[in-house]
Length: 220
Image (cartoon, rainbow, N blue to C red; front, side, top):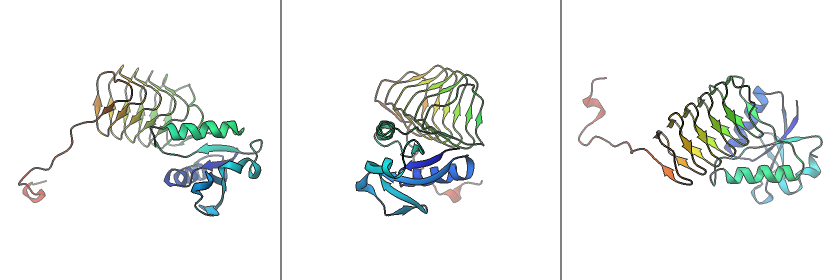
């Protein structure tokens, strides 16, 4: 068990507070954000202190930290705050839901957030600072590297490699042996069957309304 400081005061931080409180041995003691973004004195009933001076209030030899930020700037903001927290001396914790089927012998790296109904099969590897949203599937021998985000119900098939800073949208499917290059953005619902190039955007065709049709025209 560790007493925990959460970096953030938005939706991800609120979710992290709930998950850590209800489904982990850790106790959330406080929140921290950059001084310019302080939401007030408290958040979720816990103190909020400026990140610039957090170590004076909650010293790193007594507290650990979780950086609860989204995929903004292709996960690079979250990476930067993880680095700054470690420079202050904090160890970073990870959360793995008790309702995740984590079957790999390789534990995830630091500052990971792996939610309910995910499956991580044997021989898969999860790097540092990875967010794996609800229902995600990481198949055998796949590797998800540092500073990535895998959306809800996305499928990373066997032997895939997801390089750092990638974003995989909800419901996307990566075929076997595919390599997702650094910084690739894969849109929701895309099916990727070949290697990508760094910092490219891969999106599926958009859904379109049927002209002249109403939902009541169909017998369901």
